[in-house]
Image (cartoon, rainbow, N blue to C red; front, side, top):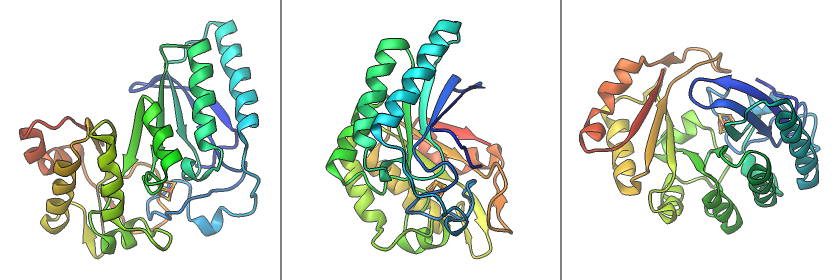
Amino acid sequence: MMREELVFGPIHSRRLGSSLGINLFPEKGKLCNFDCIYCECGWNKDGRGDHRLPRAADLEKALEERLSACHAAGTPIDSITFSGDGEPTLNPDFPAMIDITLRLRDRWFPAARVSVLSNATRVGVEAVFQALRKVDNPILKIDAPTDELAARINRPAAGYHVADVVQALKRFEGDFILQTMFLRAPGFDSGSPQVLRPWMDIVRTLRPREVMVYTLDREAPMQGLEKYTPEQMAALVKPLLDEGFSIQIKG
Ligand code: SF4
């Protein structure tokens, strides 16, 4: 899904209520250091063409306008979520944008929760880490417990190592939400014991305050992917539930 606007919504959802989205990417492009086989924005190679990233001042203007308009119209805002067509932490102004968003949130809708959906590749960068620590919900992705599987599912840019990300995530001391996609494709299966066991070990090491497991929703760029049902995912994560982890399952 290519979202064109820097600030979009509010969109109503059962989980988030009335939610504003922030898309830190070019109007007609995708920018990510992963190229996931299930990415709803499509392949990276098809999303090039517009390289003008929004800057902090652009966000400040667009968000101020939208929040003040919602406030004037009596439209509630329950959450503000950084998502959009790519990896938000790749925008060089990301840390400044978090500060701006929190300031405007406090001014217009102090009860709104700020969330960031990130692939966690840049949590080792100090300014990115500090920015993610400030938001209410840093939602950080690990789909694959090994580099070999990450190469198949996430197709990361060179230099990605799951062990480095796990090491960097330890600094959150559990105060984050871990997000993991469960799927099957020719050649691998997220629910197989050889994938599930090391993934559970990562969960036990990091002890995130919440784990979100989900599966394919919209059309994926790669053919032949199979989704899991919520019941199947619940059965797969049962050992962690029994150990007391809080797990949200999204079918
Ligand atoms: S990390 Fe997110 S935006 Fe990047 S390729 Fe994967 S699903 Fe798409």
